[in-house]
Image (cartoon, rainbow, N blue to C red; front, side, top):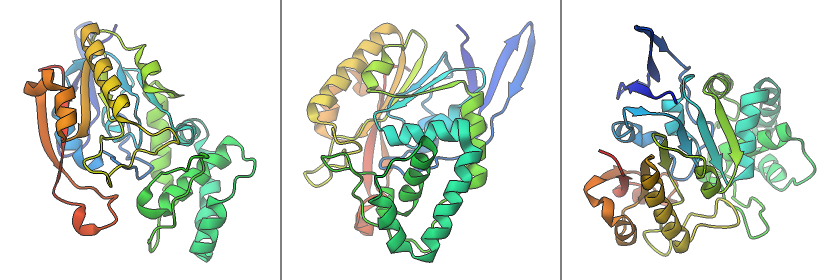
Length: 307
């Protein structure tokens, strides 16, 4: 099993991977890109803090709560497989389309961009409430267009599984970021990524010794009004949090290196009390909060099982 060593630049993404071959060192580079969606709990703002905690050596990469994939795009390498999954079908379908059909996706997004610009509110609700039969490229384009124009980029569905977020307040939202989408396609192909709609437990059954697992689940709410866990119509309950903590310990027993992000609450601290010496508190903004003044002054936990 190939184990790679990573050299980080904390200010600028490098994705450099050094590989030893018969006494020689070869350097690989993947294009710099960023998440194509705005996602609740997205980690773009926390990249410097998280990257500093990534283990220097590991075999394969697992991210079973993929979301916007900000950490994956920092670590993607041609020398290491990445197992990327999420329970959200629309999200994973969009990733797959970007990876395999980006040139077919771009014209669809340009069409949505033009139609939205003509009459934003009318077109948004027409697109949101359209549930007619679509192929996978149409679905990906609709998903991206709604994400770029809905309220705070929130993904929320009702009990019937239907997207129900109102339109956002944007002046000129960029629905089709052509350059970034093409770079993403290259990264997803070259990184040997495996994309799957899956419950996190199923994908983590494949994790082995020396693999690195980054867990970024729907956070345990810090108050009764802070629960933004309905990324699907299944939610993520306290019992789910407890089960995740058990799996964290099981992965530790298998020799996996695991890093977890979660809310800074007594309940989460209690669940991971055995790792209190490897827990860090970091400052974070909550861009999804409806009140701008309440988006700052928050903290969350980074919990790991390795030194």
